[in-house]
Length: 246
Image 1 (cartoon, rainbow, N blue to C red):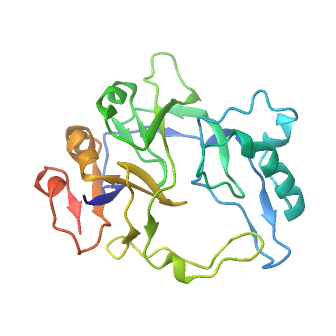
Image 2: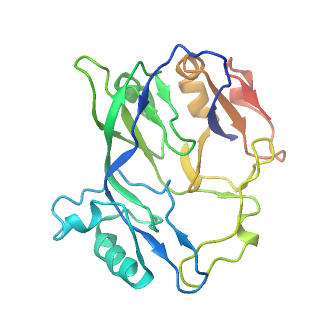
């Protein structure tokens, strides 16, 4: 099974004008690490299925901010009983549906940022039988009659080649690993599901996803980038009409 990351094709003028403000109902704060001295909070490891509405003191998670490490640890401990097994929960992790304002005309498949996948509601049924993605309706404010969007919660799976060679901070876990550009990005460990998040900013999909959503991906001007590596036989999506970059 081959795996791909999806990216927007570079075209001079797109027919898709959709755009939205990126927000989340609840979020863990960024941190000031006492060990490596980094001040950071990353996106990507978000869990829209996790509902904090009944959590006492949920207002502590409503405003993005930066806090000392000890305070972050205390806040993270409060949400851990609610997150799914195997979840990566760090500074900047978000919970609940996407919020904000949306406008314009959206493609069937939307990649606002490389690690976030959204689809039009009509596509949810086509995902049946594929593993690793949980559809969650967004809560965007939009003009009447505008088609809604559904976010796909993609959980951790697989790993990126080279990431393990960088030692993480003993306190906050941050590393100095920088993702290589597309074309040089490869998986070290392949996932066992069709959708997986192999690091915070890289969501990958199997060739089965490309086959199932072939027409919609092409219509959305999305290109698939092969990240499996060269050790497996090329199959499946390479025979589709979707643009596939090596």
